[in-house]
Image (cartoon, rainbow, N blue to C red; front, top):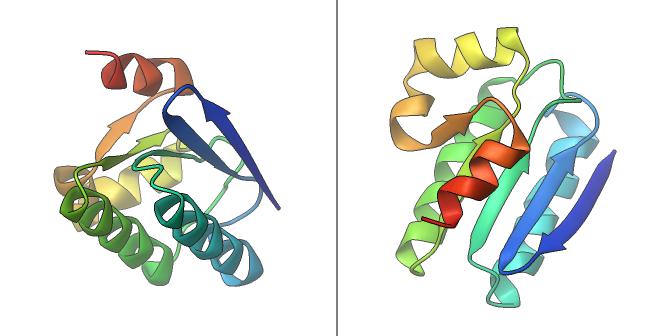
Length: 111
């Protein structure tokens, strides 16, 4: 349901199912682990995540706030069209930068 990959100073958390239930719980634990290990630049990769509920949206915003409070940040990469629209309608994409793919998100960290 989840894969974590470190690419330089960036930790990529890849949700491999809908960002609800067990997958969401695993993502929360992965973020806790990353922040606990002072890995403050995170990408939530959602290309294999077909849906996000309100709890998932709240998780994204809260994770961004936690990262910013520690001098890091969260980016979202590769959301499917429905998830991208939900993030736009709810305004989540105003708080968290959303990129079409992982490569674009990684490039943003290198600026």
